Length: 286
Image (tube, rainbow, N blue to C red):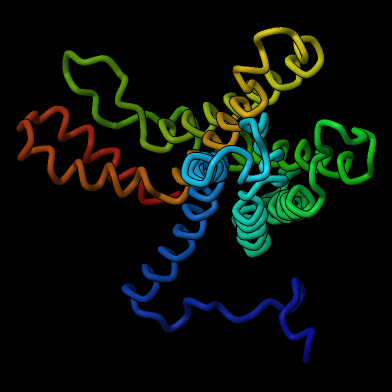
């Protein structure tokens, strides 16, 4: 009974017998899960910082567990923002465990499901194995597990943006609208979105490298600590991760669809309306 639904014996098609409206609602739920993952990731550094600021401002210095603004997102675990830090990471992990994505095609090495599960496990480790405080041993077990898991988690998130999310139709498929007298900037919707994914992946990579460079060469250098470089790098990385998943959740498709409908009323530009309609048509598959 417990082995009724396995890879070798998959469940019946959940969309079988459903109306078009019911199918759209089920697919919309899948997209909303993607957007939820992105929103939570982007919100994590903001909400832990905001709670610290609010508590310190309203109740007085030191009431949130730290007299000074924490230097990293992980350091908020040791403040009154711990519940938000752990809660958001655990929620992201649950969503990642439930995420299946597309099946691996012949010749593809990475699986959406495996990368998501690894990222989810690492998110739990980051949540439950806190980073060491300033006076604690940096070679402690919890600290090593925390930062190793964080590194693996961000590697998985970068792979999602640069490799997994960019799979699809050929990248060189341009917009069919050769608008007379205009450059060929109106590329297909898919290619434009792929550039967003790659841009987010590059931003995450650059942010992590920035943190590594700071920790190796500039940690303790006068003036740098005031800039909170580790927190800044993590902020950029997490927001980039969030943007990537929000876009993968068809948010841009909804935006383009709305703009394409409103464009004639806004400015009556036939060429721009034509381009937006082509993007809207090419965004049907994601």
